[in-house]
Image 1 (cartoon, rainbow, N blue to C red):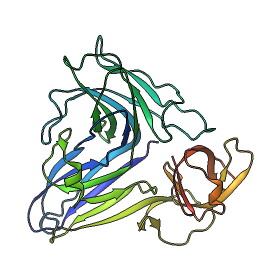
Image 2: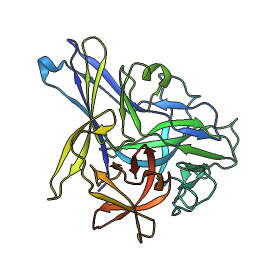
Image 3: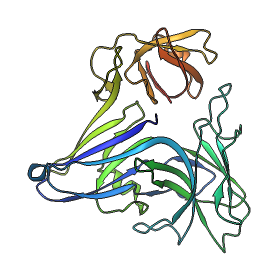
Image 4: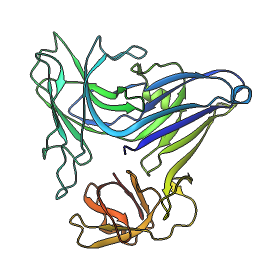
Length: 318
Protein backbone atom coordinates (compact mmCIF):
# COMPACT_ATOMS: atom_id res chain seq x y z
CA UNK A 1 0.00 0.00 0.00
CA UNK A 2 1.34 3.42 -0.95
CA UNK A 3 2.30 5.75 1.90
CA UNK A 4 0.25 8.93 2.14
CA UNK A 5 1.09 12.32 3.59
CA UNK A 6 -2.00 14.05 5.03
CA UNK A 7 -2.24 17.66 6.19
CA UNK A 8 -5.36 18.78 8.10
CA UNK A 9 -5.83 22.55 8.45
CA UNK A 10 -8.10 24.32 10.94
CA UNK A 11 -8.82 28.03 10.66
CA UNK A 12 -8.91 29.45 14.20
CA UNK A 13 -9.12 33.05 12.97
CA UNK A 14 -12.50 34.84 13.08
CA UNK A 15 -12.76 35.27 9.28
CA UNK A 16 -12.66 33.13 6.14
CA UNK A 17 -9.10 32.38 4.99
CA UNK A 18 -7.66 31.02 1.76
CA UNK A 19 -4.88 28.46 2.18
CA UNK A 20 -2.43 26.93 -0.28
CA UNK A 21 0.05 24.07 0.00
CA UNK A 22 3.54 23.74 -1.49
CA UNK A 23 6.75 21.71 -1.18
CA UNK A 24 10.31 22.73 -0.41
CA UNK A 25 12.21 22.85 -3.72
CA UNK A 26 14.53 19.99 -4.53
CA UNK A 27 18.28 20.44 -4.89
CA UNK A 28 19.10 20.66 -8.62
CA UNK A 29 22.33 20.10 -10.52
CA UNK A 30 22.37 21.01 -14.20
CA UNK A 31 19.71 23.73 -14.18
CA UNK A 32 19.41 27.43 -13.51
CA UNK A 33 16.77 29.14 -11.31
CA UNK A 34 14.47 26.83 -9.36
CA UNK A 35 10.72 27.56 -9.37
CA UNK A 36 7.92 26.28 -7.14
CA UNK A 37 4.28 25.58 -7.91
CA UNK A 38 1.32 25.59 -5.57
CA UNK A 39 0.00 22.05 -5.03
CA UNK A 40 -3.52 22.90 -3.82
CA UNK A 41 -5.60 25.89 -2.70
CA UNK A 42 -8.95 26.20 -0.95
CA UNK A 43 -10.99 28.67 1.14
CA UNK A 44 -11.80 27.67 4.74
CA UNK A 45 -14.40 29.10 7.10
CA UNK A 46 -13.58 29.77 10.79
CA UNK A 47 -13.59 26.54 12.77
CA UNK A 48 -15.48 28.10 15.69
CA UNK A 49 -18.55 28.86 13.56
CA UNK A 50 -18.40 26.09 10.94
CA UNK A 51 -16.44 23.14 12.33
CA UNK A 52 -14.76 22.92 8.90
CA UNK A 53 -11.35 21.27 8.43
CA UNK A 54 -9.39 21.40 5.16
CA UNK A 55 -7.56 18.17 4.27
CA UNK A 56 -4.85 17.77 1.63
CA UNK A 57 -3.35 14.34 0.94
CA UNK A 58 -0.60 13.18 -1.41
CA UNK A 59 1.18 9.93 -2.29
CA UNK A 60 4.74 9.69 -0.95
CA UNK A 61 6.38 8.64 -4.22
CA UNK A 62 9.11 10.36 -6.23
CA UNK A 63 8.09 11.40 -9.74
CA UNK A 64 10.08 13.00 -12.55
CA UNK A 65 7.97 15.43 -14.56
CA UNK A 66 8.26 17.59 -17.67
CA UNK A 67 5.99 20.15 -19.32
CA UNK A 68 6.14 22.63 -22.18
CA UNK A 69 6.34 26.26 -21.12
CA UNK A 70 3.49 28.54 -22.15
CA UNK A 71 5.67 31.51 -21.20
CA UNK A 72 8.76 32.01 -19.04
CA UNK A 73 7.88 31.11 -15.41
CA UNK A 74 6.20 34.04 -13.69
CA UNK A 75 4.83 34.26 -10.14
CA UNK A 76 1.04 34.11 -10.17
CA UNK A 77 0.83 32.44 -13.59
CA UNK A 78 0.45 28.73 -14.53
CA UNK A 79 3.80 27.10 -15.22
CA UNK A 80 2.42 25.09 -18.15
CA UNK A 81 0.52 21.91 -18.93
CA UNK A 82 2.01 18.77 -17.37
CA UNK A 83 2.80 16.50 -20.30
CA UNK A 84 4.69 13.51 -18.86
CA UNK A 85 5.61 11.95 -15.52
CA UNK A 86 7.41 8.80 -14.42
CA UNK A 87 7.70 7.25 -10.94
CA UNK A 88 11.42 7.06 -10.29
CA UNK A 89 13.95 5.79 -7.75
CA UNK A 90 16.70 7.70 -5.95
CA UNK A 91 20.41 6.97 -6.30
CA UNK A 92 21.78 4.77 -3.48
CA UNK A 93 25.17 5.07 -1.82
CA UNK A 94 28.13 3.33 -3.48
CA UNK A 95 27.66 -0.39 -3.04
CA UNK A 96 23.90 -0.08 -2.51
CA UNK A 97 21.34 -1.97 -4.57
CA UNK A 98 20.82 -0.26 -7.96
CA UNK A 99 17.62 1.72 -8.49
CA UNK A 100 15.90 2.91 -11.66
CA UNK A 101 17.03 6.49 -11.16
CA UNK A 102 17.25 7.98 -14.68
CA UNK A 103 14.70 8.82 -17.36
CA UNK A 104 15.17 10.30 -20.84
CA UNK A 105 13.04 13.20 -22.04
CA UNK A 106 11.80 13.29 -25.64
CA UNK A 107 10.34 16.26 -27.52
CA UNK A 108 9.63 14.68 -30.92
CA UNK A 109 7.17 13.50 -32.08
CA UNK A 110 5.74 14.59 -28.72
CA UNK A 111 6.89 15.45 -25.21
CA UNK A 112 7.51 12.43 -22.99
CA UNK A 113 9.70 10.59 -20.48
CA UNK A 114 11.08 7.08 -20.90
CA UNK A 115 10.63 4.27 -18.39
CA UNK A 116 13.43 4.84 -15.81
CA UNK A 117 16.61 2.78 -15.94
CA UNK A 118 19.66 2.44 -13.71
CA UNK A 119 22.62 4.79 -14.09
CA UNK A 120 25.63 5.45 -11.85
CA UNK A 121 25.94 9.17 -12.57
CA UNK A 122 23.54 11.06 -10.24
CA UNK A 123 24.54 12.01 -6.71
CA UNK A 124 23.17 10.04 -3.78
CA UNK A 125 19.49 10.67 -3.05
CA UNK A 126 18.76 12.16 -6.48
CA UNK A 127 17.29 11.13 -9.82
CA UNK A 128 18.27 12.22 -13.34
CA UNK A 129 16.35 13.58 -16.32
CA UNK A 130 18.38 13.34 -19.54
CA UNK A 131 17.26 16.08 -21.92
CA UNK A 132 17.44 15.78 -25.73
CA UNK A 133 18.74 18.16 -28.36
CA UNK A 134 16.16 20.91 -29.01
CA UNK A 135 16.07 24.55 -30.04
CA UNK A 136 15.13 26.76 -27.02
CA UNK A 137 14.35 29.64 -29.40
CA UNK A 138 11.39 27.62 -30.71
CA UNK A 139 10.22 25.94 -27.49
CA UNK A 140 11.20 25.71 -23.81
CA UNK A 141 10.38 23.05 -21.25
CA UNK A 142 10.09 22.75 -17.48
CA UNK A 143 11.58 19.68 -15.80
CA UNK A 144 11.74 18.62 -12.18
CA UNK A 145 10.02 16.90 -9.26
CA UNK A 146 6.31 16.08 -9.30
CA UNK A 147 3.84 14.83 -6.67
CA UNK A 148 0.63 12.81 -6.89
CA UNK A 149 -2.49 13.86 -4.96
CA UNK A 150 -4.78 11.31 -3.32
CA UNK A 151 -7.28 11.88 -6.13
CA UNK A 152 -4.66 10.78 -8.67
CA UNK A 153 -3.67 14.18 -10.04
CA UNK A 154 0.00 14.84 -10.83
CA UNK A 155 1.45 18.33 -10.30
CA UNK A 156 4.94 19.60 -11.09
CA UNK A 157 5.93 20.63 -7.56
CA UNK A 158 9.22 22.37 -8.35
CA UNK A 159 11.26 22.66 -11.52
CA UNK A 160 13.88 24.42 -13.62
CA UNK A 161 13.88 25.46 -17.26
CA UNK A 162 15.41 22.47 -19.02
CA UNK A 163 18.61 23.00 -20.98
CA UNK A 164 19.07 21.02 -24.22
CA UNK A 165 21.30 17.95 -24.38
CA UNK A 166 22.26 17.79 -20.71
CA UNK A 167 21.80 15.83 -17.47
CA UNK A 168 19.43 17.37 -14.91
CA UNK A 169 19.84 15.85 -11.42
CA UNK A 170 17.11 16.43 -8.83
CA UNK A 171 17.28 15.58 -5.10
CA UNK A 172 13.73 15.82 -3.64
CA UNK A 173 13.04 17.12 -0.12
CA UNK A 174 9.88 15.87 1.63
CA UNK A 175 9.01 19.04 3.51
CA UNK A 176 5.64 20.70 2.87
CA UNK A 177 4.20 24.10 3.76
CA UNK A 178 0.81 25.71 4.34
CA UNK A 179 0.33 29.44 3.84
CA UNK A 180 -2.55 31.88 3.51
CA UNK A 181 -3.17 32.97 -0.08
CA UNK A 182 -4.88 32.02 -3.32
CA UNK A 183 -2.26 30.33 -5.50
CA UNK A 184 -4.19 27.64 -7.37
CA UNK A 185 -2.57 24.28 -8.11
CA UNK A 186 0.06 24.49 -10.85
CA UNK A 187 0.60 28.24 -10.35
CA UNK A 188 4.14 29.56 -9.86
CA UNK A 189 4.64 31.04 -6.39
CA UNK A 190 7.50 32.74 -4.56
CA UNK A 191 8.89 30.04 -2.27
CA UNK A 192 11.23 32.32 -0.29
CA UNK A 193 8.56 34.89 0.54
CA UNK A 194 5.75 32.38 1.13
CA UNK A 195 7.72 29.94 3.31
CA UNK A 196 9.12 32.64 5.64
CA UNK A 197 5.93 32.74 7.75
CA UNK A 198 4.29 29.46 6.67
CA UNK A 199 3.48 26.32 8.64
CA UNK A 200 6.17 23.66 8.06
CA UNK A 201 5.16 19.99 7.84
CA UNK A 202 8.42 18.03 7.83
CA UNK A 203 7.91 14.41 6.77
CA UNK A 204 11.62 13.46 6.78
CA UNK A 205 11.55 11.97 10.33
CA UNK A 206 8.80 9.56 9.20
CA UNK A 207 5.65 11.51 10.07
CA UNK A 208 2.67 10.81 7.84
CA UNK A 209 -0.02 13.18 9.19
CA UNK A 210 -0.01 16.79 10.40
CA UNK A 211 -2.68 18.82 12.19
CA UNK A 212 -2.15 22.50 11.35
CA UNK A 213 -3.97 25.35 13.07
CA UNK A 214 -3.94 28.93 11.83
CA UNK A 215 -4.14 31.09 14.95
CA UNK A 216 -5.96 34.45 15.35
CA UNK A 217 -2.61 36.29 15.67
CA UNK A 218 -1.36 34.95 12.32
CA UNK A 219 0.93 32.27 13.80
CA UNK A 220 0.68 28.52 13.24
CA UNK A 221 0.54 25.43 15.43
CA UNK A 222 1.72 22.20 13.80
CA UNK A 223 1.29 18.78 15.43
CA UNK A 224 2.90 15.84 13.57
CA UNK A 225 1.75 12.24 13.88
CA UNK A 226 3.25 8.89 12.90
CA UNK A 227 1.40 5.63 12.29
CA UNK A 228 2.16 3.13 15.06
CA UNK A 229 1.53 -0.54 14.39
CA UNK A 230 1.15 -2.53 17.60
CA UNK A 231 2.17 -6.15 18.11
CA UNK A 232 -1.43 -7.32 17.71
CA UNK A 233 -1.71 -5.68 14.29
CA UNK A 234 -3.79 -2.68 15.37
CA UNK A 235 -2.59 0.74 14.25
CA UNK A 236 -2.97 4.26 15.59
CA UNK A 237 -1.57 7.72 15.01
CA UNK A 238 0.87 8.77 17.73
CA UNK A 239 1.65 12.44 18.29
CA UNK A 240 5.24 13.55 17.85
CA UNK A 241 7.13 16.55 19.19
CA UNK A 242 10.33 18.16 17.92
CA UNK A 243 10.86 15.32 15.47
CA UNK A 244 10.67 12.55 18.08
CA UNK A 245 7.65 10.37 18.81
CA UNK A 246 6.62 10.60 22.44
CA UNK A 247 6.20 7.65 24.79
CA UNK A 248 8.02 4.47 25.65
CA UNK A 249 10.36 3.20 22.94
CA UNK A 250 11.13 -0.49 23.52
CA UNK A 251 13.47 -2.25 21.10
CA UNK A 252 11.15 -3.81 18.50
CA UNK A 253 13.09 -3.50 15.24
CA UNK A 254 16.17 -5.06 13.75
CA UNK A 255 18.23 -3.74 10.83
CA UNK A 256 20.18 -6.30 8.83
CA UNK A 257 22.78 -5.86 6.13
CA UNK A 258 21.56 -5.78 2.54
CA UNK A 259 21.90 -9.54 2.18
CA UNK A 260 19.90 -10.09 5.37
CA UNK A 261 22.61 -12.34 6.82
CA UNK A 262 23.53 -10.28 9.90
CA UNK A 263 21.80 -7.90 12.32
CA UNK A 264 23.86 -4.69 12.46
CA UNK A 265 21.56 -2.64 14.73
CA UNK A 266 18.32 -2.74 16.67
CA UNK A 267 15.94 0.07 17.55
CA UNK A 268 12.38 1.24 17.99
CA UNK A 269 10.02 1.67 15.01
CA UNK A 270 6.78 3.63 15.20
CA UNK A 271 5.81 2.99 11.58
CA UNK A 272 6.54 -0.16 9.56
CA UNK A 273 5.08 1.48 6.44
CA UNK A 274 7.65 3.48 4.44
CA UNK A 275 9.19 5.82 5.34
CA UNK A 276 10.20 3.81 8.42
CA UNK A 277 11.66 5.89 11.25
CA UNK A 278 13.85 3.87 13.64
CA UNK A 279 14.80 5.50 16.96
CA UNK A 280 17.13 4.41 19.77
CA UNK A 281 19.54 2.71 17.36
CA UNK A 282 21.91 0.40 19.22
CA UNK A 283 24.68 0.94 16.63
CA UNK A 284 23.88 4.14 14.69
CA UNK A 285 27.36 4.38 13.14
CA UNK A 286 26.70 1.12 11.32
CA UNK A 287 23.95 2.80 9.28
CA UNK A 288 25.12 4.69 6.19
CA UNK A 289 23.06 7.20 4.21
CA UNK A 290 21.63 5.92 0.91
CA UNK A 291 22.72 2.35 1.59
CA UNK A 292 20.33 -0.61 1.40
CA UNK A 293 19.29 -2.66 4.45
CA UNK A 294 16.74 -5.26 5.51
CA UNK A 295 14.41 -3.65 8.08
CA UNK A 296 11.65 -5.38 10.03
CA UNK A 297 10.34 -6.45 13.43
CA UNK A 298 12.65 -8.52 15.60
CA UNK A 299 12.38 -12.07 14.33
CA UNK A 300 11.13 -10.94 10.89
CA UNK A 301 9.88 -10.64 8.29
CA UNK A 302 12.16 -7.93 6.86
CA UNK A 303 11.88 -5.71 3.79
CA UNK A 304 14.58 -4.05 1.71
CA UNK A 305 14.85 -0.32 2.57
CA UNK A 306 17.24 2.52 1.75
CA UNK A 307 18.44 4.82 4.54
CA UNK A 308 17.42 8.33 3.44
CA UNK A 309 17.92 10.27 6.70
CA UNK A 310 20.11 9.82 9.78
CA UNK A 311 20.62 12.07 12.79
CA UNK A 312 22.08 10.91 16.11
CA UNK A 313 20.55 7.55 16.99
CA UNK A 314 17.59 7.91 14.61
CA UNK A 315 17.40 6.85 10.95
CA UNK A 316 14.69 6.89 8.29
CA UNK A 317 14.36 4.08 5.73
CA UNK A 318 12.29 4.52 2.54
